[in-house]
Image: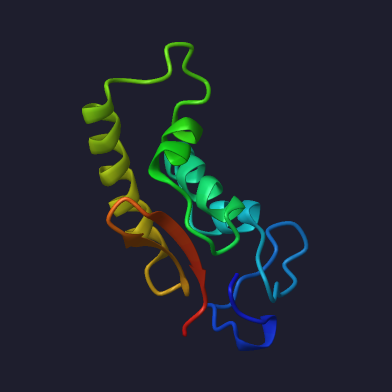
Length: 116
């Protein structure tokens, strides 16, 4: 997302419907292709919306627990669940050219598409 499409270096991804090669995947295609769990998909979706810019952790928490009428667990448990899900998400996406990176202390996370 912070690079031109011509410089993206992603693993080959095909559309799940038509099986045609996809040069720049959508969130839905990535979720389907890499068997991302619903919680991981919410995390990925939150940073995907940032288009390569930092997304604050609180915004990711909001996405993770959007369906919870109580807003989710305590902040400590919420952060622990986030870190576990992020670790699993990164493992699923390993080698794909897609990752979620920590921007810095209290700066949030951002989506990286392709290799720099």
